[in-house]
Structure formats: C-alpha cells, structure tokens
Amino acid sequence: MSENISSSQPSGGAASTFRRLEYRTPAYEPVAALYRDALGLTEVEPGLLRSVDAGFELAFEVLPEAQRATETTVGLYHVAFLLPSRAALAATLRRVFAAVRSATERRTETGDLEKSTQDTFSGPTFFIEGASDHLVSEAVYLRDADGNGVELYADRDPSEWRRDAEGNIAMDTVELDMAGLLATATGTEGLCAGSRIGHLHFHVPDLESAEAFYRKNLGLKVTQRSYPGARFLAWGGYHHHVGVNTWAQDRPASEGAAGLVRVVLSEPPPGAASPAELTTDPAGISWSW
Image 1 (cartoon, rainbow, N blue to C red):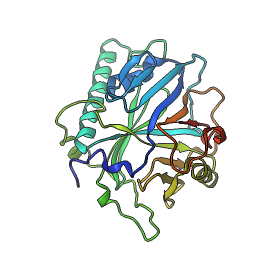
Image 2: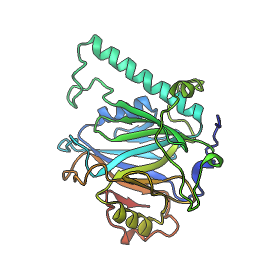
Image 3: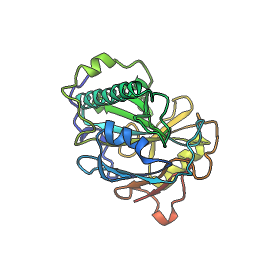
Image 4: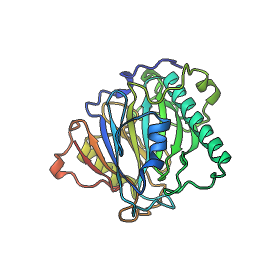
C-alpha cells in the first residue's frame, strides 16, 4: 500500500472540481464545530469557510426555521473530503479525535453533556459514525450537527485499483486498519493544502433515473454498478465523483429542510448540459458552474 499518495494522481483527469457547497442550517456555530474547529477550514466570515489553499469553500445560510431531519431522506448522504496522502488523513483524524475528546471533557465538567441544541451550544455536536476500507481508498465517516454526512478519505494509488472486463472498478466495504492508519500521522493538522472535495454521495429515489440525469447533464460515466443499492459515476476514470443510493427508501426531505442545497463546479464538465438546461438533480440539489 502506498504511504504517500500524490494529490495529483486521484483526479482521474477531471477538468472540473467541486468549488463551492451551499447549505441551509438553523444555526451556524454547531456545524462550524466540525468544519472550522475540527477540520481546520478557514472562516472568511461567519457562515463562509474556505480550505487553506482556497481550493473549495462551504457556505451556510442560517434560517432558524430550517428543520434538521429526524430520519434518512432523499438528499445528501455525504460530502467526501479527499486528503492528499494517508499520513495527511491520519493527522486530520487525530485532530478530530482530540476535538471530540476535549469537548466531551469540557461538557462533562460543566454538566452540559446533554445540552447541544442551537440555543445552548457547547460543541462539538458532530460524531464519528464509522470507518471502512473500500479497496480503492480508506475512509472515516462523521455526521455534523445538522445530520449531514462527511467522509474523510485517502485514495490508494490508482495502479492498485482493480477493474473487471467491463471496466467496473472493484469497491467494497471491509474493516479499516485504524491503528495502522493512525500510526502514519506525524502531526494533528486539519485539512491540509492539497485536500479537496473528492466526491459527493446522494440518497435518490431511483438509480436508473439518477444515472440518466448525471450522465446527460453532467457528462459523468458509470464506474461501478454492482454495489447493492448504489451506483457510482465519475469523470476521467476516477473511482467516483458522484455516488447515488436508494437507502433512504424514497423518503422526501421536507421543504426548507436543513442540508446541502447547491453545488458549484469550477468549470463545465466535458459533455455537460448548459446551466440554463440544468434542473435540480434527483437528490433535490441544484448544480452550476
């Protein structure tokens, strides 16, 4: 396994990158606890966070009436931040673990452990959901205060990705060697220079219509269609820039719900429709460039 994966290798030759994600939230500070405090994004102004090398940004519109989902619905499953190396992923994880430990100790000391609402925020309210080895990458999963999924991952070298006769990239979910991963860390930095939004994964009502939308409007090509209940698409031969699944069982999000509402790309992808022709995607997300 490669210990130092170049940040240029996993791009798959895609010209477009995920430049900006726009969210709706009932309160900013609880979600900032993950992205700003634990992951180390720079706060340009309240509600606007940017990566250290300005490669991408997250924008949060605060609407107090926005409701956090109480169950899984159609929409964002997770945004995945791609670290430039295994050691960089390990360093970020150590920072995240330290943030959770520090906040838990602080809230325990103040007797505020159960109080993490938007009115009595004592952060962080995010939590770690799990960790997996996907053959092409190693990943750890979190969820922010609004319930938005976050993946932190590092790719294995593309020369190690296995493809079948039809070109499908082999992907799986197996146990992650967390101890081995963390042992590669040389510090506790957040998302370092060279980190970027590697892919987005959505809950959709139907795989076939979702595939048709992303192929027609965004020029994406299917790279994996055998994973149960999911499908993966990419530009330029990457394992995936967009994942879709039907695990939300076609439950629609409520109107005005908290969560991701818009994706802005750096430039039009090859073969994409014009922005004027682009409609909201099957996950309810708007796209532009």
